[in-house]
Amino acid sequence: MKHTNDVEEGQNVNTLSEIEEYYKAREQQLLKKLHQQEDALVAANQKLKQLTESQKVSEDETARQRAAREQQLKDELYRDPLTGIYNRRYYEEVARKTIGPAGIALIDVDDFKICNDTYGHYAGDMALKTVANTIQSCIRASDLLIRYGGDEFLLVLSGIPGDFLQTKLEQIRTAAQMTSVPGYSHFRISLSIGGTIQTITDPMENIVRRADWLMYQAKCRKNAVMVEIPGRSLAAPETLLQEKSRVLLVDDSKMNRMMLADILGDRYHVLEAENGKECIEKLQEEAGNIALVLLDINMPVMDGFEVLKAMNANHTIEDTPVIMISSEDSDAAIRRSYELGASDYVNRPFDARIVYRRATNTIKLYAKQRRLVQMVSDQIRARENNTDMLVGVLSHIVEFRNGESGLHVRHIRIITETLLHYLLEVSDKYSISAEQQDLIPLASALHDIGKIGIADKILNKPGKLTPEEFVTQINILKKSEHLKSPNNQRGKAVPYA
Image: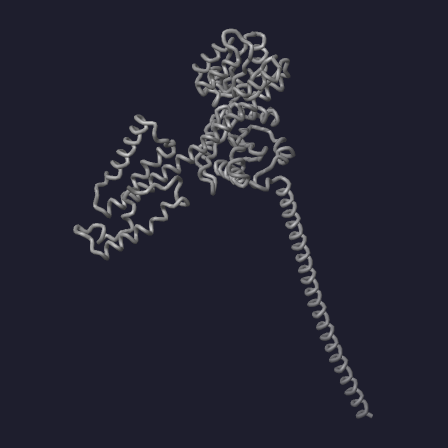
């Protein structure tokens, strides 16, 4: 019996051991599963974090793209497509609301229409780009440059001291004058600039109107700067009179002169004459300074038609426009006025606005015409200088190869020019135009140009040429015969003596 009890106690021990092992194994399984769940939770948290960060990046990217798109739309809305600067819409919707202190300037490109008419619209576009780039090179990034109109620019210089405004605008004007338009070196830019200071209490619109008025004062001279600083006088009265264009009123009626002076006096400096004789005297005193003559027909001493005849005789009519203002409305009077060189004809009674507009348009037209003539003259002069330089180079090459004096060509040209002038003084047998009078002395400087094509050993040989050398020289002369053909000459070919 004792043995049986020992066996049962051993079986119970084994059973407890197994149970203990079982629970330990179970505990290990639970711990392992717990660790797996913890790892899964960590992985899930990391994944969630990645998704959150990815979503945030996507949202940030979307926000950046949206901001970039909005900026692009604003640029398209507020930027001038030609020059890349702000446009008039930006001024109306944004810049007009800004407050001072700031320097405000309106800038106009002088005779821009002449540039378009002479060189084409592409040249005009290039000129506007050049002006915009030049102005931007002279201002800060915080300043505003706006294309205000076709060839007008509005400049807002934030916080600029009043004492420095004139200097800054002069710097811009000088920089533009020194800049050439790419591809159009003969066209030079000039700017008329009006500027003033905007204080904290000044509405932008009022200051822009003031700058516009100052700009038109500058345009009376062109390539000029007019600046007004609050608390300072713009200029002495006599200085303003000098800067305004002069208009001469010629009428024997004082009442008529007063009416016309009231119409034109704000913008122009008005001179008066009671009759045609006084008109001619005024034109002589103010030679080249009269921008327009308003001329009556029926006057004592000398009437309007006689004034036109006198202006034709001394060629004043070519540079000084005349508008006839008369109560005479017959076709014969109007026709005779135009035949004698009048630019326009206005009947009395007249509309003040029509007279003002016709006078202004005529003055602008003649100013642009003079500017165009000056541009053409400058181009011709530049071409003549280039021609003279080329002739001088070729002549010196010939002189160097032939061993002659450096003054030989110069002496030949002077002698030819002197003889030609003497010939024209003593004889009218030869009809030689002014252009030919310039070309003949120029051509004389090239009298030995054929020597360039001759070999040095032949050209500088002291003795007689061999038959082979002579044939070589003749062949060179034959090759130059095409220069005497009508297709290669301005005028008629002249055989050598």
